[in-house]
Length: 73
Ligand SMILES: [Zn+2]
Image (cartoon, rainbow, N blue to C red; front, side):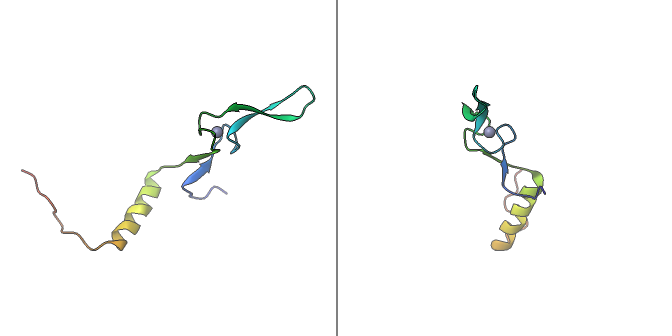
C-alpha cells in the first residue's frame, strides 16, 4: 500500500536510478541515468498533508508563540 512517506520510489526508473535496457542476449543492462530522480531512485514527496503533519509536530515541540507576533501597518 502507498503510505505517507517522505520518499517515494521513482516511477520512471522504478527505484533503480537508471533505465533498464536489455542487450541482444536478453540480459538486463544498465541504461541511461535517470534524470528525474538524479539517479537516486527515490523522489521526495511534498504534499500539503505532510506539511500539516510537520507543522503540528513543530508546534507541539515549541513553546506557544504570541498570538500576533508582528503586526504590520
Ligand atoms: Zn528515476
